[in-house]
Structures are given as C-alpha cells and as structure tokens.
Length: 102
Image (tube, rainbow, N blue to C red; front, side, top):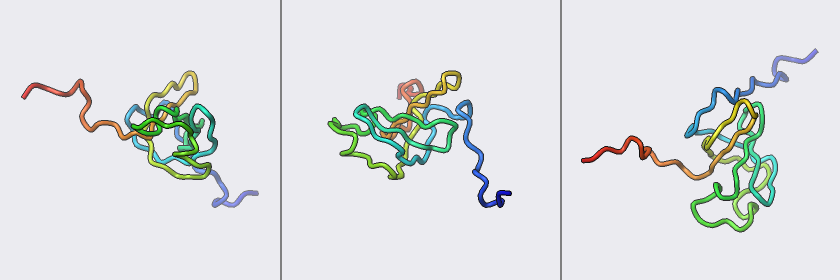
C-alpha cells in the first residue's frame, strides 16, 4: 500500500487554465520547434520556439535545458483537444482591449 507522501498531488485541469495565467514549469523535452513543459496539468504544455524570447531564437537549447524550471504563462488552451500552449515572454500588464483614451 502506498504511503500518503507517495501519492501524486492532483493535476490541474486544462479547463481551469486561462490565457495570461502565470505558472511554473519544468522542461521535460526540447525539440527543434520548441519545448514541452510540465506545469502540473493533465498534459505537458508546448512553448513554441517563437514564444521563448522576445528576441530571435535559433535553437531551443540556447534558451532551455531539460530539467530546468522556468516561469511561464498560458498563451492558449484547448481543453477539448488537450492542447496547452505556453509562452516564456511576459505578457503586457494592460491588454490592448482595456486601453482607453487619456
């Protein structure tokens, strides 16, 4: 029988995540097109290479290494399709839709 300390903590549901939400993620795999991060959700999220830095990135490994823990944000989530898109680029604090004259 498993001891209580060996029980895995509950995973986040994709339906509970919202764009712009800040998370902590551990890099589980790097690819030519980006990196997969474990943020505690039911599925690993993908940070596309274009979302790793505001500057041009030639190689994912120049920014991230497997096992590295990073601060990331939800870029988009599709709970039905079990897809989680992440970004390492800090979102602006005031969305354009909220900007008012004056």
